[in-house]
Length: 287
Image 1 (cartoon, one colour):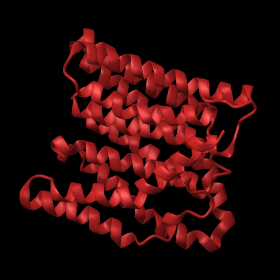
Image 2 (image 1 turned 120 degrees about the vertical axis):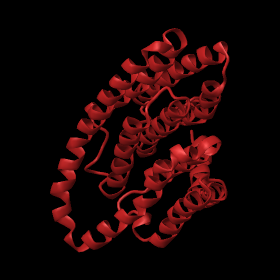
Image 3 (image 1 turned 90 degrees about the horizontal axis):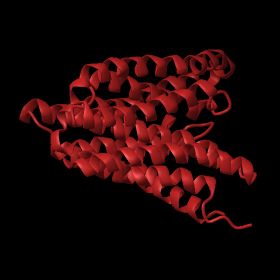
Image 4 (image 1 turned 90 degrees about the vertical axis):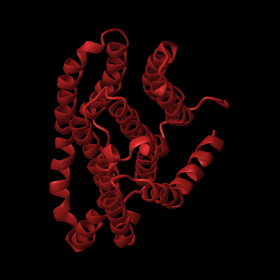
């Protein structure tokens, strides 16, 4: 039977709705905030329904296993950083939450069989999505509760790292099994300078904050597609170093970021974005 709405298409819908959600959050109107709250709820429902559809119609696929954590990471990176920009959230706990996602994404690309989505990680995602909705609701009706939101955000950050402990434990045991690749593995760690640079310069981006979010989203999508022998282990690390250096130098000399951010957007689209969009198109064409 042909299904118009397949589990994988439903997962992609979560990603496609995120720009719409962010635009609603950035709007100053009360109705837009309510719309954002409803959209967060719908995203949470799709996260639940794609698994049900996959099991019901026996369409549990390797693509679905890849897409689901990618969608979750892009949600956290985009929505949480927009909430930082709007001053709903403090930056430091959000930085730690996204830092966790960056490292897990890196480790999953190297050890896909060892780092499958665990029950505690699914619970972590549920808490993160629910908390985003709760924060929006509180700011609509109880804006004075910001202190409560940020205390709770620290709990989310701590739980996020706790949920990654089983992953780190498995990796520590697995690393011993591929000693010949250890040099490549540790060399590939330097590539993380790129996403970390995007994350660290987010508070300095001003009105161009959306470029950091876009580039991080492309990063999570493309790196989520890599399995077994990560391409980023063989990419030229100096490209990442140059990008981050240009970001730092522009801010040091001009006390703002402009040209370097547009360079980031251009490079991220051609390095990560095109491949991500091609993969999305292939998924949409599949039954």
